[in-house]
Length: 505
Image 1 (tube, rainbow, N blue to C red):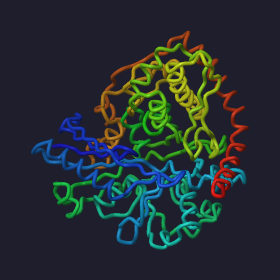
Image 2 (image 1 turned 90 degrees about the vertical axis):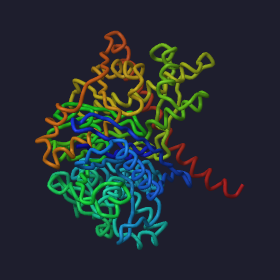
Image 3 (image 1 turned 45 degrees about the vertical axis):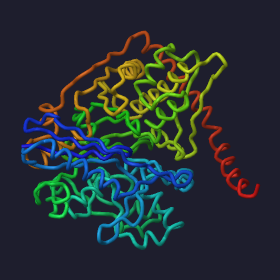
């Protein structure tokens, strides 16, 4: 027997084949293009994503040999709007989670207190890259596309629909922005709060644990080289599946994904709706409990940007090796890593947030800049762990950045907790494997499946002296950010004036 799992990331489709013992045997990766057709617009061709998935599944199936595939499972990037018509066909490109076209709308909601009010029902803070902002923007700027659309899916829902012909969304994907986190169903109160009752027909059926499996259609089976009727499990979206795949399955365990987003997340017993409005609260279904997740809008692309800036290949390991040539604190150079045109969403929401080097002098060189960038990103991880409210005793890591021992050692020192990397090449796919095992009756619980199939690799413990140094630096980071935040509205006004004036000069 074999299992095939898909993890459709923002820039890379990963398809993994597991043998009958659950060992990771085949890993196939397919890059996908992220398009930026206008400032703040971030899109993907939905059919191109499907073709990459189908091609990857076919290759994995061929490389697994004759072993029959017992089930498929899929996890994917979350949020965004993957709009389809009544026949399940795309009505245009997918608008992604890091799209910023609705930033001004979201800023208006935040200023009016809408976001804080919504948090009391939803447990999450909405942002520009979820359906509230995107659908509102489309209604104003592309109403024809909305008129042609029958459902707004996520990437995982899109792939599941191509596998099974069923239009649905996993409850983790459905949780932001319209779910009442207590009832785990869409909230009419939230739709009214956003003045979006008109969008209710676009919201797909929510699939929870008892309905997350459907059969592979004949047409998809022919395209993939698998038998029709093969069970397909719709796993939680990637941040939750990756936590499972990294071995974080029980209350208090934490995980950080060092990918396109830097996502820091902690498993909690119950949603907290009366605290500070920050981050996301996702139902964890088969595992029980909830995930407090803090996916940043700027993550791996900050590493890519820094590599381009410093004249090197886009490799987190190479950037970390360069950073190791500078001392902790980068000789007083501090970096705020808020480079997304949509601003930042966790652990604070400000669509106007922007990045900057602070303390730069002529004495600073490339290693200092590299270290400041990685320290800035890692300070955000500490910031998000603190916002979760549950002290972390261990931090599981995954994603491309987790391959760098230099960065992981820095992360242990900055956060003050042990950092552990597991042995799987693709933790998101492993999480989908675990969910599929439980959903198809091959395991009783996620925790049981994780104990059997998730194995620990490298571990880094914090150095006491460096941890004490970084604890002081963390407070400096917060103070500098607070001071810089006062400039963000000024810069946003300047950008608007520049766009207006630029058309007449």
